[in-house]
Image (cartoon, rainbow, N blue to C red; front, side, top):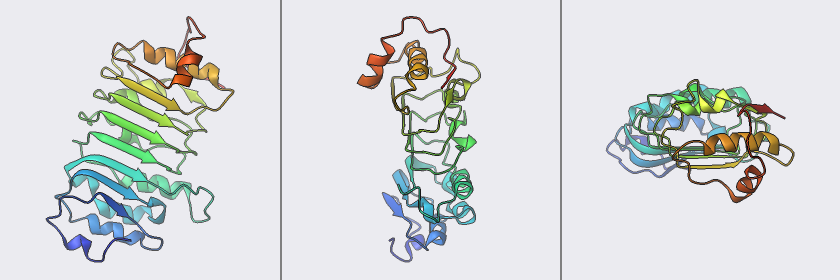
Length: 230
Protein backbone atom coordinates (compact mmCIF):
# COMPACT_ATOMS: atom_id res chain seq x y z
CA UNK A 1 0.00 0.00 0.00
CA UNK A 2 1.21 3.49 -0.84
CA UNK A 3 0.84 6.33 1.68
CA UNK A 4 -2.10 8.65 1.14
CA UNK A 5 -1.28 11.97 -0.48
CA UNK A 6 1.84 10.80 -2.27
CA UNK A 7 0.53 12.52 -5.39
CA UNK A 8 0.99 15.88 -3.67
CA UNK A 9 4.77 15.46 -3.49
CA UNK A 10 5.27 17.15 -6.83
CA UNK A 11 9.02 17.59 -6.33
CA UNK A 12 9.55 13.89 -5.63
CA UNK A 13 12.40 12.51 -7.72
CA UNK A 14 12.85 8.95 -6.48
CA UNK A 15 10.06 6.42 -6.05
CA UNK A 16 11.39 2.92 -6.54
CA UNK A 17 8.13 0.97 -6.41
CA UNK A 18 4.51 2.10 -6.63
CA UNK A 19 2.36 -0.80 -5.43
CA UNK A 20 -1.35 -0.78 -6.24
CA UNK A 21 -3.53 -2.55 -3.69
CA UNK A 22 -6.70 -4.46 -4.48
CA UNK A 23 -9.57 -1.99 -4.82
CA UNK A 24 -7.15 0.93 -5.10
CA UNK A 25 -6.68 0.99 -8.86
CA UNK A 26 -7.78 4.62 -9.03
CA UNK A 27 -4.73 5.59 -6.98
CA UNK A 28 -2.47 5.15 -9.99
CA UNK A 29 -3.79 8.62 -10.90
CA UNK A 30 -1.64 10.02 -8.08
CA UNK A 31 1.31 9.64 -10.42
CA UNK A 32 -0.12 12.28 -12.74
CA UNK A 33 1.62 15.26 -11.15
CA UNK A 34 4.88 13.52 -10.20
CA UNK A 35 6.66 14.90 -13.24
CA UNK A 36 10.10 14.97 -11.60
CA UNK A 37 10.46 11.23 -11.14
CA UNK A 38 13.78 9.97 -12.42
CA UNK A 39 15.90 6.84 -12.56
CA UNK A 40 14.35 3.43 -11.89
CA UNK A 41 10.59 3.15 -11.41
CA UNK A 42 8.48 0.05 -10.76
CA UNK A 43 4.70 -0.20 -11.07
CA UNK A 44 3.48 -3.33 -9.29
CA UNK A 45 0.18 -5.22 -8.99
CA UNK A 46 -1.20 -3.74 -12.18
CA UNK A 47 -3.93 -6.40 -12.22
CA UNK A 48 -5.73 -4.08 -9.78
CA UNK A 49 -5.96 -1.25 -12.35
CA UNK A 50 -8.43 -0.68 -15.20
CA UNK A 51 -7.77 1.00 -18.52
CA UNK A 52 -9.41 4.29 -17.63
CA UNK A 53 -7.46 4.71 -14.39
CA UNK A 54 -4.14 3.78 -15.98
CA UNK A 55 -4.40 6.66 -18.45
CA UNK A 56 -4.15 9.05 -15.51
CA UNK A 57 -0.58 7.93 -14.76
CA UNK A 58 0.80 9.85 -17.77
CA UNK A 59 4.12 8.02 -17.74
CA UNK A 60 5.07 9.51 -21.10
CA UNK A 61 5.37 12.93 -19.43
CA UNK A 62 7.98 11.72 -16.92
CA UNK A 63 11.08 12.17 -19.04
CA UNK A 64 13.49 11.46 -16.17
CA UNK A 65 12.52 7.79 -15.88
CA UNK A 66 15.28 5.68 -17.42
CA UNK A 67 14.20 2.21 -16.28
CA UNK A 68 10.55 1.13 -16.11
CA UNK A 69 9.26 -2.13 -14.65
CA UNK A 70 5.59 -2.97 -15.28
CA UNK A 71 4.53 -5.91 -13.16
CA UNK A 72 1.26 -7.78 -12.77
CA UNK A 73 0.63 -10.46 -10.14
CA UNK A 74 1.65 -14.04 -10.85
CA UNK A 75 -1.81 -15.58 -10.29
CA UNK A 76 -3.28 -15.81 -13.79
CA UNK A 77 -6.29 -17.79 -12.52
CA UNK A 78 -7.56 -15.00 -10.30
CA UNK A 79 -11.24 -14.34 -11.25
CA UNK A 80 -10.69 -10.59 -11.55
CA UNK A 81 -7.98 -10.95 -14.21
CA UNK A 82 -9.17 -9.87 -17.66
CA UNK A 83 -7.08 -10.13 -20.83
CA UNK A 84 -8.65 -7.16 -22.58
CA UNK A 85 -8.41 -4.90 -19.54
CA UNK A 86 -4.74 -5.73 -19.10
CA UNK A 87 -4.11 -4.90 -22.75
CA UNK A 88 -5.81 -1.52 -22.23
CA UNK A 89 -3.67 -0.88 -19.15
CA UNK A 90 -0.44 -1.67 -20.99
CA UNK A 91 -1.51 0.52 -23.92
CA UNK A 92 -2.00 3.42 -21.50
CA UNK A 93 1.38 3.08 -19.79
CA UNK A 94 3.41 4.39 -22.71
CA UNK A 95 6.79 5.42 -21.24
CA UNK A 96 8.90 8.49 -22.09
CA UNK A 97 10.97 8.44 -25.28
CA UNK A 98 14.29 8.60 -23.40
CA UNK A 99 13.66 5.27 -21.65
CA UNK A 100 16.73 3.03 -21.50
CA UNK A 101 15.41 -0.17 -19.90
CA UNK A 102 11.98 -1.80 -19.97
CA UNK A 103 10.75 -4.86 -18.07
CA UNK A 104 7.25 -6.35 -18.45
CA UNK A 105 6.35 -9.23 -16.14
CA UNK A 106 3.22 -11.39 -15.69
CA UNK A 107 1.22 -9.38 -18.24
CA UNK A 108 -2.02 -11.28 -18.92
CA UNK A 109 -3.03 -9.87 -22.29
CA UNK A 110 -2.99 -11.85 -25.53
CA UNK A 111 -1.01 -9.22 -27.44
CA UNK A 112 1.65 -6.70 -26.53
CA UNK A 113 1.16 -2.98 -27.11
CA UNK A 114 2.60 -1.61 -30.34
CA UNK A 115 4.50 1.10 -28.45
CA UNK A 116 6.96 -1.52 -27.16
CA UNK A 117 8.53 -1.69 -30.62
CA UNK A 118 8.31 2.03 -31.37
CA UNK A 119 11.45 3.02 -33.28
CA UNK A 120 11.40 6.41 -31.54
CA UNK A 121 12.80 4.69 -28.41
CA UNK A 122 16.32 5.52 -29.56
CA UNK A 123 17.88 5.01 -26.11
CA UNK A 124 16.23 1.69 -25.27
CA UNK A 125 19.11 -0.74 -24.75
CA UNK A 126 17.47 -3.41 -22.59
CA UNK A 127 14.12 -5.18 -22.99
CA UNK A 128 12.92 -8.03 -20.78
CA UNK A 129 9.60 -9.84 -21.27
CA UNK A 130 8.92 -12.42 -18.57
CA UNK A 131 6.01 -14.80 -17.86
CA UNK A 132 3.52 -13.11 -20.18
CA UNK A 133 1.81 -16.47 -20.50
CA UNK A 134 -1.14 -15.51 -22.70
CA UNK A 135 0.74 -13.58 -25.40
CA UNK A 136 0.67 -15.37 -28.74
CA UNK A 137 3.26 -13.30 -30.60
CA UNK A 138 6.17 -10.97 -29.98
CA UNK A 139 6.36 -7.26 -30.77
CA UNK A 140 8.46 -6.06 -33.72
CA UNK A 141 11.52 -5.85 -31.52
CA UNK A 142 13.85 -5.56 -34.50
CA UNK A 143 12.82 -1.91 -34.84
CA UNK A 144 14.69 -1.04 -31.64
CA UNK A 145 18.01 0.05 -33.12
CA UNK A 146 19.84 0.55 -29.81
CA UNK A 147 18.82 -2.75 -28.20
CA UNK A 148 21.77 -4.57 -26.62
CA UNK A 149 20.16 -6.88 -24.07
CA UNK A 150 17.03 -8.84 -25.01
CA UNK A 151 15.63 -11.34 -22.51
CA UNK A 152 12.46 -13.34 -23.15
CA UNK A 153 11.12 -15.97 -20.78
CA UNK A 154 7.93 -17.85 -20.07
CA UNK A 155 5.95 -16.82 -23.16
CA UNK A 156 4.56 -20.31 -23.55
CA UNK A 157 1.81 -19.41 -26.04
CA UNK A 158 4.22 -18.06 -28.68
CA UNK A 159 3.99 -20.58 -31.54
CA UNK A 160 5.64 -18.76 -34.40
CA UNK A 161 8.63 -16.47 -34.74
CA UNK A 162 9.66 -14.58 -37.85
CA UNK A 163 9.18 -10.94 -38.75
CA UNK A 164 7.35 -10.57 -35.43
CA UNK A 165 10.78 -10.57 -33.83
CA UNK A 166 13.22 -9.35 -36.45
CA UNK A 167 11.22 -6.53 -38.02
CA UNK A 168 10.53 -5.69 -41.64
CA UNK A 169 14.15 -4.94 -42.55
CA UNK A 170 16.24 -7.82 -41.23
CA UNK A 171 19.43 -6.34 -42.65
CA UNK A 172 19.40 -3.57 -40.03
CA UNK A 173 17.60 -5.34 -37.18
CA UNK A 174 19.47 -5.65 -33.88
CA UNK A 175 22.40 -3.54 -34.98
CA UNK A 176 23.58 -3.27 -31.36
CA UNK A 177 22.50 -6.63 -29.92
CA UNK A 178 25.04 -8.14 -27.53
CA UNK A 179 23.12 -10.62 -25.40
CA UNK A 180 20.03 -12.70 -26.06
CA UNK A 181 18.54 -14.95 -23.40
CA UNK A 182 15.44 -17.04 -23.91
CA UNK A 183 13.38 -19.36 -21.81
CA UNK A 184 10.35 -19.08 -24.09
CA UNK A 185 10.06 -22.63 -25.25
CA UNK A 186 9.05 -25.85 -23.63
CA UNK A 187 10.40 -29.27 -24.58
CA UNK A 188 9.23 -30.20 -28.06
CA UNK A 189 9.76 -26.80 -29.68
CA UNK A 190 13.50 -27.11 -30.15
CA UNK A 191 13.22 -27.08 -33.96
CA UNK A 192 11.85 -23.55 -33.99
CA UNK A 193 14.27 -22.49 -31.29
CA UNK A 194 17.31 -23.71 -33.21
CA UNK A 195 16.40 -21.66 -36.27
CA UNK A 196 15.79 -18.54 -34.23
CA UNK A 197 19.02 -18.85 -32.28
CA UNK A 198 21.09 -19.44 -35.41
CA UNK A 199 19.59 -16.28 -36.86
CA UNK A 200 20.58 -14.34 -33.76
CA UNK A 201 24.13 -15.66 -33.95
CA UNK A 202 24.44 -14.17 -37.42
CA UNK A 203 24.40 -10.69 -35.91
CA UNK A 204 27.95 -9.32 -35.48
CA UNK A 205 27.51 -8.10 -31.90
CA UNK A 206 25.86 -11.26 -30.59
CA UNK A 207 27.71 -12.55 -27.52
CA UNK A 208 25.83 -15.24 -25.63
CA UNK A 209 22.68 -17.17 -24.96
CA UNK A 210 21.49 -19.57 -22.30
CA UNK A 211 23.72 -22.67 -21.98
CA UNK A 212 20.83 -25.02 -22.69
CA UNK A 213 19.98 -23.13 -25.84
CA UNK A 214 23.61 -23.13 -26.93
CA UNK A 215 23.71 -26.92 -26.77
CA UNK A 216 20.53 -27.16 -28.86
CA UNK A 217 21.71 -24.64 -31.43
CA UNK A 218 24.97 -26.53 -31.90
CA UNK A 219 23.08 -29.51 -33.32
CA UNK A 220 22.07 -27.72 -36.52
CA UNK A 221 24.70 -26.72 -39.06
CA UNK A 222 22.79 -24.71 -41.63
CA UNK A 223 19.15 -23.79 -40.92
CA UNK A 224 17.53 -22.40 -44.04
CA UNK A 225 15.05 -20.07 -42.41
CA UNK A 226 14.37 -18.24 -39.18
CA UNK A 227 10.62 -18.69 -39.64
CA UNK A 228 9.21 -21.83 -38.11
CA UNK A 229 6.10 -23.21 -36.48
CA UNK A 230 5.45 -26.03 -34.06
